[in-house]
Image 1 (cartoon, helix red, strand yellow):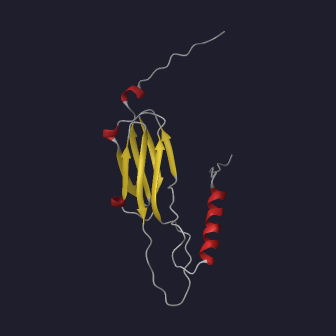
Image 2 (tube, helix red, strand yellow):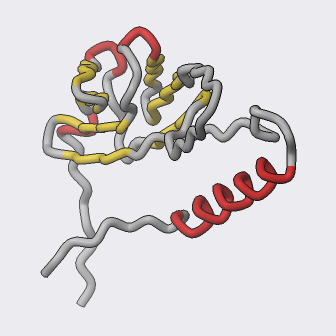
Image 3 (cartoon, one colour):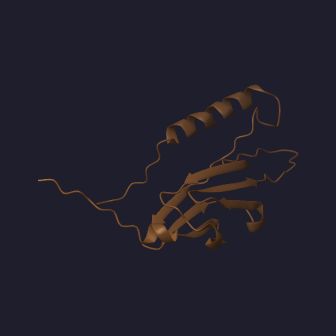
Length: 146
C-alpha cells in the first residue's frame, strides 16, 4: 500500500500563484502587488515519552528562526529574505516563496516547556518536546458495558 501525502490546499495555492502572475503581468512594477508568505510544512510524531515536531524551513539560519513553546502549542516565526539581483537584460523566474511566516501548531498532549530541544540542519527544524509527567503516567478508566 502506497502512502500518499495529503495536500488539501494545493489547488488553492496553485490558483493563488496563477492570480499573482496574472496581476504582476498587468502591472509595470518589479514588486508583486502583495507579498506572498509561506507556511512551513510540518510533521508530528508521538511516542511514550516525547512529542517530535519537524518543520521544513530551508534557506534560513538558526538565528532567523524564533521558536516559542507553551504547554499545548508551538509557535514558529521567521522570515526568508529574497536575494536582490539586478539584471540588465534577461528574465528571472522564481517559484521560491519569500517573506515572513508564522505557524502555530497545537500539540495533542501537554509538554514540559523547560526541557524542549531544538536542532536545525539541512533545512529541517527538529523539536523534541518531552511530555509533561502527568501525561506520561495518565491512566484512564474505561467503563465496559454489557
